[in-house]
Amino acid sequence: MYLIWFVCALTLCYSLTQDSLRFSIAIYASFSCFGAGLVFWSVGYQPYSLVTVATIMFIVSYPFAGIANLFLDTPAVVSRFWPETDKSMLACGVGLTAFALGSYFSKFTLSRNLLIRKNHCFFIPRPLPTSRYFNCLLFSPYLIAVVIKFFLNIYYHSSISFYDVSFSKFMNLLEIITWVGLTGIFLQLYRFLFTRRGLDLALFFFLLAIAVLIYVPSGSRMQAIGMLPPLIGVYLIWEKGFIRKFFITLLAIAGMFIFIGVLGIYRVLSVSTEASLLEKVQQLISVTADFFARSSESGNDTHEKLSIIVHRVSDFIATGRVISHTPDVFPFRGFGDMVDWWQIAVPGVFRPSNNPLNFNEGTIQTLKYGVSDGPWTSTPIMILSDFFSRGGWPALMLGMLLLGVAYRKLDAFVAGKNDLFRIVFFFLFMRFAWQFYVSSLLLTVTSLVRETVVIYILSRLIGYLGNKSTKRRELWSIPK
Image (cartoon, rainbow, N blue to C red; front, side, top):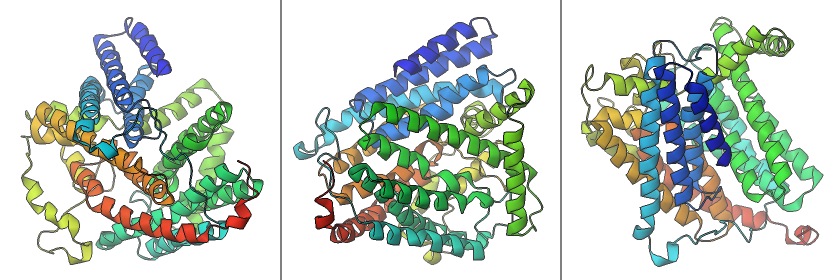
């Protein structure tokens, strides 16, 4: 947290010599960091809180991205969005402050046995790890989901190749299967952190490499590295060595930024959508080789690479555009669409065909506001701008306050007991926690209602089977 304040102070000093817009951005980015500090305080600075995970991603995509743009010669965001950046930073500060209040006051709504004790560490003492065979078997559904997506033409990102929207109704089921498979990788990481054996570490990296590389040709960053933030989060919980924590986290973050840059170029320079998988792989290899070959060239080239990375994390543009255009250009849309949200509980294949619930409505809103370039992009609406588009600042503050209460209640549930079921539940829900900042209100409510029930059932099942797979005799020799 001290590092964040130092960066803010440095940015403010730098912005004093710049124009008024840059100074406003620096001021509101610092306010956003203040709001984040309130959130961390509300949970007792616990790194293993779902509230903390969600807040970190707000920091990356709002104040961090805004400050990074300030220090570039030319902002990485599209020029027409840059004048609205200060509004994005202000919205983040207001939203995180309300989120912190909801998180703090949630303790008054919890029963006595669910109150989270100060400095309580969620998963200590730790449950015994699952066997290697169980972890590999659990990973296998991940591969099955990839094959199904490929043959249904929903494997590639829409900017890379044809995406058959007629099969998108199966995406949620396939995503559930995918994350069940990723749980195998998570449990293998947990096993290594418990046993500290080289074989367990090698198996973890083997499974992780398969999970990442198999999705790289698709051009989808979220599919390829979407599991890394949750894995880094759980690693930080159980890793005791500070030096190891620091360097592993630094390498992982640097690797993700490089990966984002390479895939960004690959999506721009991708071959024809009619190209075969082999041709796309060859294009990807060529782009990667060129990216690293030019890494030591002129400063302009380095600036270009940095701009690509900063542009990718600058998701805040949607928030600034929505605040600037609502209600002057587009009226507040209110909450009238919630009358159809009963369909959240209905599987996609059974929803009414005449008025199906569109879970992609956030992308439709960004297209309406002119944020995205066309229907083939996946520019997120952001939860802050979704609230503002419905009712302005009051809706944003009240909505984030209520979500702060909801997320802290989930923290209390996870902290209630230390067993395999709850650590699996924690990992599976981190998928939604770290994407909370880019979600629409519809997707957020879905994650808190339907997906929480699904994750509960899956966690119970995995926990039961995992406990059965534990080899007690093998664990006698594990160092304490």
